[in-house]
Length: 208
Image (cartoon, rainbow, N blue to C red; front, side, top):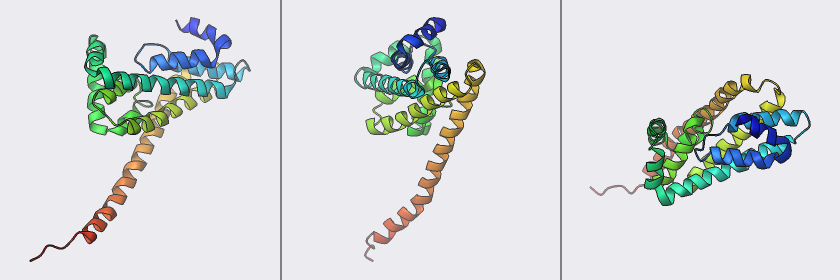
């Protein structure tokens, strides 16, 4: 399968990348990360444009995310039942559900980087439980941009060593996403006391 898809890259470029990444984002098992990194290597050789590789991956990822989210929003129980029909997928879905419950919107971002195998399932669960579309999409698009940019660019830089850099990419993306979550959490914790103080100051005093 991988060899066939790689053979199509010089012919269809960003189109085949967008298709495969989009289907992968919908929990269809395809070698999306290897394909994007390999396409980056093709760009280094001059057979593709790097910006087209990154853009194709980002568009495919974003469309796949939206399709999965709205499918789950309208057909949540049926979708989840189908996905859980496989015992291996059922375990991943249980992990994804617990992860989303504990971490909220941060789980959407992290599931596109350090925990990318959970990504499609976090998307379906987000739609099924009614997570706000704006919250989901903002985190999902940031994650998609990180993932697409990292795999395409590092494939470009390390052309010929795709298999060696795939695991390193996952770790690097996870570090970036985790750092972002920590910074955001720190900002929220820092702002909260001042907001609470202002609320206390403006609250009417109780009559004695």
